[in-house]
Image (tube, rainbow, N blue to C red; front, side, top):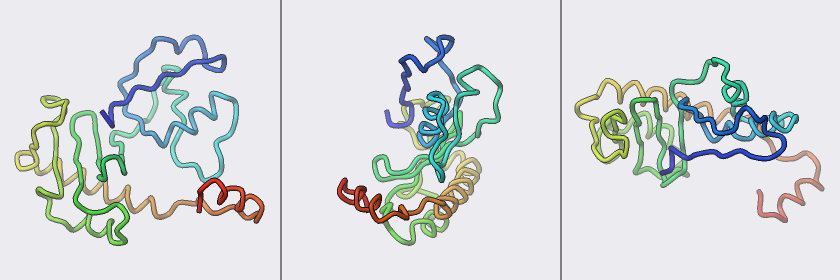
Length: 172
């Protein structure tokens, strides 16, 4: 329910050819802002992570990632492919050593679970012990993805006025 979320687009900016289409490619929520910006004819804000789905929505073959990542929902991180999902849990997302723990905790319960989505789309049966090689590969991808989060280019606003306006709305 948290990783197979439908996206419905509507309104005058949405090209008519997109109506009623359904895509099977894996995409990430981080791609939503660049997509909506492109649909609206705008540039995504500087420092925005993710990539627009517009070419995908237009039916063009694209070089989409084979693995997508999720963090924060239900207090865990995961890596998902079209066939499997590896979940890392049991460590607070706010721990300073989260990345180290992701890389070093034993690849077994209670920290990790692996689901084979082909036979278990509802993620009820942990198959980590039976498919350890897949779990190992997905963990390596998760470690690399998590390390890339620390290199974000996002910064606080330079203008004191802009910073104050954001603070009044609960940011920083």
